[in-house]
Length: 280
Image (cartoon, rainbow, N blue to C red; front, side, top):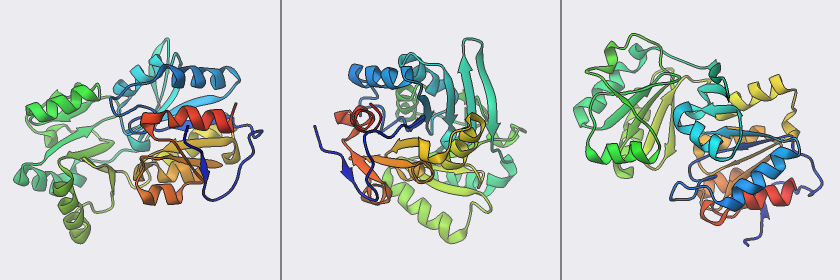
């Protein structure tokens, strides 16, 4: 077992965290997008002791719910990188909060993506829309348990959206990121790299940290009572807000340096290890 390395401040095993916020892909799941039995057992054990488990992910509610169900839990999910908070129980899914924007605000970026042949999708709280799909994109959506709706033009949707995402190889997105930042093509919206293969554009107030802060307030849980575990730049606000922010070993160096502690990688059950060390 890789030893947990404290980076900003030490924590005692006896501290009680009332809420654990978990990123999903690259953190909770291994690289095969699987949950291990040991991780499930550990999460159920800490949940049974009264700790809230909140999945905080870039996924949509529909592709997050199967993970929550595999954990054997009901509860609140922070999805779309903080843009949508949803409660799920036996009655179904209900919208708790969302940060949306208008399609018209991304028309310049849509034109760029169409011209350059870069795949994109747009999301409302519960649905995803695409204009085309190839086999490579289809495999990606299947991997993330997503079933997008095919439309002629997303510009004609006429409804507020919560996220606009580009999907391409890292070198393509590196170029896009530089050009869009130089041209400020995203305007008043927020652009974030949510993975090597993804760029997300969202409402400027939408992030996992703000969503977690709002949820914690409704649960009357203070930031020092929260532990958050993530692996990428879109997890930084969540990790910063929490009393203890932990990065898995497979995170970029910048993310690990910003964390309070580093646990084992997602392929070595880092979430299980961190919960055992700090909560059980």
